[in-house]
Length: 451
Image (cartoon, rainbow, N blue to C red; front, side, top):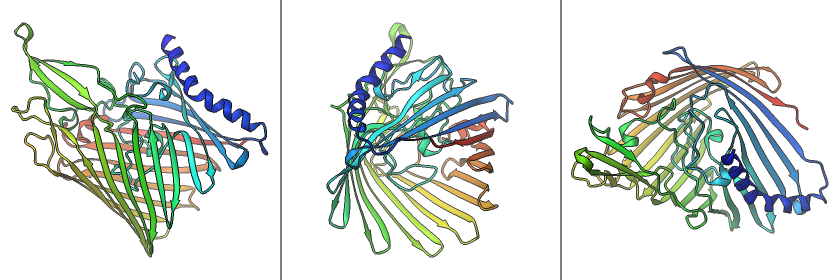
């Protein structure tokens, strides 16, 4: 109860000034608010054990209100209930989230989240959006290259849609026309980082390339609390320039931010003669410089995306490395091809190369690491029936994931689906570590009538 009161107080401190101002403005509103909502439920059963992994129901409501002077307020709330509590046992600790960003927890299986709350409109030629929101950079599907403004929750690994897995942040988002281009400026005082699953969760990370080398038998491991970024003083800053050259849509991007994954620095000591490794998570600043380009050639769409991250810190198993973390700048990209050559059919291929600029000893991944994805989607009956399959594969670790799905619209606004998430590979791979988490998924989504 004390934790609930603290979370509510944080929400009120952050949102109340904005809401009071909006209520004052809304007294002169010209039209009533628009309210829409969706009800979604999904049941996942692990194929190996036959155990239910989740039975989650989510009610999401959205309110849009027009304000004077052409401004608009949007608020999105979400109620989430999971009957089994196996994706985040004991409830999420939320240490990674800034207090005004956290959800309200009612026991271990029910939480209420203020998903987004922002005001947007124009001040002369300048468009601005202030409040809790998502900002989407990049065009890749399945895996991310430039879509790094918002952190992500990994409660279900990378299985949810990006829109659902991104963690909205409190920020100022401004777009200014500069000749034929549009300049976007971001100020993000919200220090929230990735929400990583705890040990014991269904999708807790164990792959060495993510969490570092496994400790030898007989060695005690002590994990200390992370030294987290400060709000406001640790603000992130970003900018993007977007323009069109001929038939090409182009952007140039820059983000100065704290990495959303902590650097795991270790030290070895022998208290009482017992070897003990102390791990201290630490968040480091990095610069992300990137660009995107896309063009359509008849039935083929070409997408290009690149990012250069400096510095990038990686776990190392080099015995001569004192803290188990080494620096190597990272050059990543994606080449995407979307083809609509068959009727009502999309075939999409993506190639994701990632190159470590510095060849550091002991790094727990190959210097050039490449993943590929393939999507095949076909719709029938005027798009009431949709079949698709997504395949993700890492060429270096020879592991991956296959996700077939069939969706059917029972009536307008009411969808049901059945699908599967199949992992393969060894326990040292990013996908293979979840080889025992294969599952069948049943679900439905109902768009409730708009008020």
